[in-house]
Length: 466
Image (cartoon, rainbow, N blue to C red; front, side, top):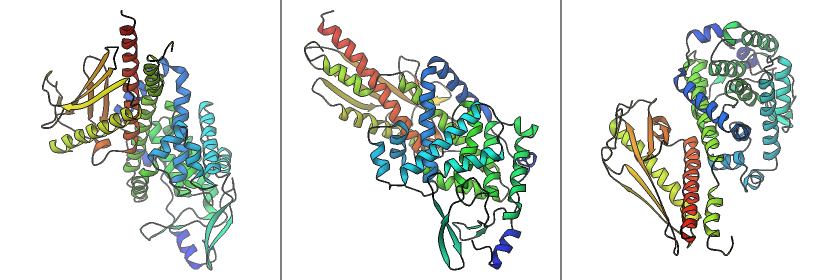
């Protein structure tokens, strides 16, 4: 924005400084129950398979680094593409190239910045202004210019990296309203004040989500750099979850509307929605990592299917109806995933069947119930072709919380095994989230690969006549 126009002075005067951490903490809270449970489960997985933790952290970090750029409309992404890049599937580099020649350099710069934040968090070093300036340099390394609105129209100017802004960067919001950030002359003092708040005893003793939400919000209120402030804020927020659970906060581009709504609520001093948003994304990240840990311990579906094929070669606040609908949504998603994955491994050596039925035995145990109507059980049958006679049958029953709240889980519980796929109501209602669909894909891969591996072993035993 042109600093010579009269409106700039009015917008500077309208700047509302960020609250102290004490004031923020007095009107916000973090419900720790689910966080503690997920964090404990993550810690247990890490102990059981410590060699896979770094890989799973890298998956989450790549997802966070990719979608932080998409949130700023630097390129477009969706949950399928995010999955591809995060897990480094065969097509991820091609997909990134299709999004323009700048997409890969931008992603790599953002990934490097997240890795630097991880390193800083691991060393447990205090965050300094110098570290934040360096973070801005890293995260914007592939961005040569930024757009400035002047009296004669928009212009592209060289982006100063690692330097506080020299021109005002007030914006017109998506609602068409003017929004003020810190004036140029007060930005250094405001950044110094933020760092003092982050070193306070109250801040250091706070829950990591509380720390992340406050730091992110206060930083974007200041908007200290000419451009790249959102990307820096999200990376900074991840420093606190890296320290607590060794994972970043992953905010997908599909969360953008909810994200901006929560920030706008905070601008009106209603800070709780933003704390809730950051907690939800942290929980999503932990669940994604947990499913990744489980999946890495299982053979891949392709490997299991190939092993079976080799046997045939020589020597080689809801209503009950809404809860039911959420359960139905989960069944439909699972049906879609299982069916598509079985089609992908179709082979004469293997016959498969997926069906859904209604059964009341064994009875559901409180606080769960079966759906009021419709199927409540998934039956998956895998059979090897002659001359073997091997069969694997998996059965999962759908259990719905009797007195459902947003904190209750829907369970797909496997009969005869201590295993369940759990889903929060708000992951399914009013529509399935991107995180959930990624988790379902991982879950379906795992149970199918394990079932095909077990079938292969039984078929081999049958061929050997034992």
